[in-house]
Length: 635
Image (cartoon, rainbow, N blue to C red):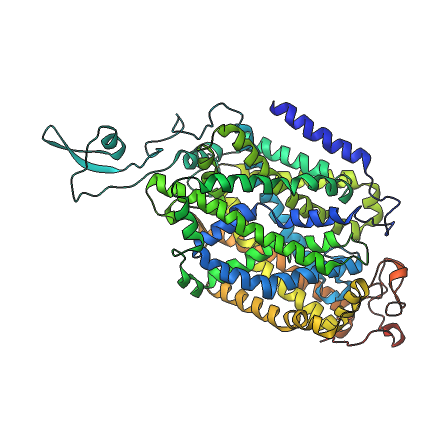
């Protein structure tokens, strides 16, 4: 049955590849191609934004950072930084029909920002597909009459139990014995008053995750070889991703009609079922009710987590929004698209939280613990809480398969776009080679990333996954976002950028832009800079659950972050040297910056060169070449 399912999926993908081509006759941009339909783009954007993080990251961050209180900084970050940056990136990509690196023809000095975005995305794709591999493994494990994590089978240890356990004193035949609480309950005995119950209970789903799925070692230094079945799942995940992207957006744009919609159906079903479980109200109460810890808002980590979750969830400062929007037709309404995608994404995060916390409440009730003690780590949330809940459902193997297939589709949507971001950057740099060798380049990209990801499917793999996420999904994103806002709104000029947007969506009243101008110029960069500095000052060494990382692992994490951001000063130095020390010249747009097609350039960009190669940067533009530019703000 598993082989049949894989064969069916691959056949569907192959049919799509044979049907679609990179460019068709209806495309506005014949060289680069466009989305076949507006719905292809919207569903791709929603699928990119609504990913695994909405299920296993946001609920975990909410639980870690004060429950419902976390919604306060989350909403603030959405309004003041997430949505403004999201709209800005969509407009940048659509206006220039360029990817995240070549779009910085607008401010050559900051081209390194685009490289930083692509490098962060590349590192994230390595571990993101590992989580998809986890989903595949659990999906295959669901093809059993009894789910393997239903009870404590031979792979478990003495701490495993479906019911509350512990040690207590009990009187039997006038003798005081110390025994486990489960034995006491089964024999209708009582613990002696005022004795301590030592609670060391672990549910089967937790032990199955750690002892069977991960074969987890005691630390990152104990690699102990590759877990072969996870490596095979990882290989399958990369095969699916590579096959779906052979024809770029023409093929992936069709797949998202299923992968972007199907998760909502399963989430609704699981929420309804979770709400009927005993103890569910306690979990939901912890999520948004009286158990919320408002004092958490005084911690820098909470606000940093809110900001990075917005960027992680909305996918801002990753380069993917620019890449997807670059395939839009010029007059597409990117403003309404930004609103629709942001509202849908954040609503999904909150909705998924209800489904998660209703099940956490049930788990806490079963193990007689508080909700905060149920799960040790965010990465295990979707693979501990949900699997345990699925064992409570009738025909649990069916629901288990559907749920993990949902996780698979959630992850693939985001992974498609992240890989497409890398390929789009290659396309912009080498357009002719990419057109001719797209399939070999796609295969090579997936193979390299698969090999790099093998370290994440060793027995210490979960520590590597956590380490990469900790350093690459945090302050580096904030750094890139701040420079992006400074480059577009301070150097290029917010007023000029607004006029560019109006060329696409039509003239708007000045009051329409008041909020966006305020956020782009002042509120968003100041807010993100403050959080960036605060998080760096209060930095804590990473950990996975109760396991602390060694010094060398923390140093390696910093090296990964520095490797991503160091290209900003490197490229700035290169641009200044090529401009013979004229920094002001590197702050001006290149002559080929503007709409890709001559029919859209109008009078403002009539100076624009038709070739894709920029003129020599040492040639100082004449006054004539700047005709049509107004509201200029270079510095």
